[in-house]
Image 1 (cartoon, rainbow, N blue to C red):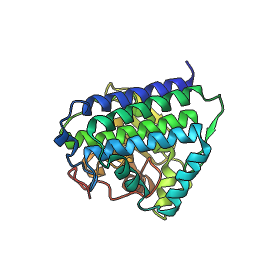
Image 2 (cartoon, rainbow, N blue to C red):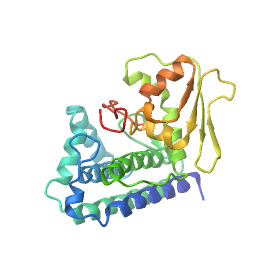
Image 3 (tube, one colour):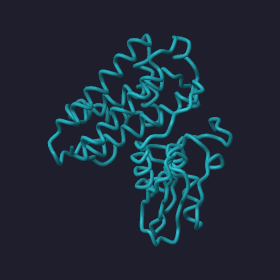
Image 4 (cartoon, rainbow, N blue to C red):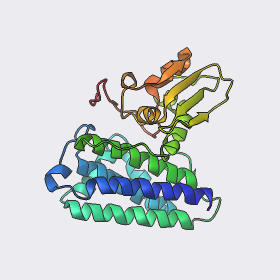
Length: 265
């Protein structure tokens, strides 16, 4: 199995876990408010449907993807909400679920069939196939957390979180950029414990500044699904401590994030 196939398998499994959470919901539960202001459970699934379809276009139809980029450039502050609302508009939950499932399947097949070394266009720099799959997994997990919180469900952490953590670590300098801050000149060390007690490490082992704590907590932080005050993360060094206030694994503006105690800011 190639590295790409392994990540695509994890993406598939992440989608299936969220699918199981929403598949049996009644219509009123699809309309339940999530921590994202103005977004229901339906909006969350519609957003994932749209982003999967855009990723599919990036892999299979460059002209269609270029048109999506044009729409984003024309309305950078609203295009995400507009796209989710357009998919959700008038769609029954069963139809939305079927469309999301179809898009997930087609995206997985397209990523598996991409020749080795393929670079896929995206809203930022082009991405490799494993990177695209990791990014889709990160977003599926993050929006799945919004859905779980809306439904009062508790999800067990899985080994798939390593993909989210890796993106969060690699996006350190981007987080400073979107906040208009200069990135630190030295790398950080990040050490995270899995639920099973294993240690995941990123960055030089001898780095003077570091972040340590549970893997789940770091993933909640970098997807801005929890406030740092509610997480068991420790920073050593002023720059590392500042990073915990601004870290994000996703592209685009940081958004309000969550206030202490779990609510949306």
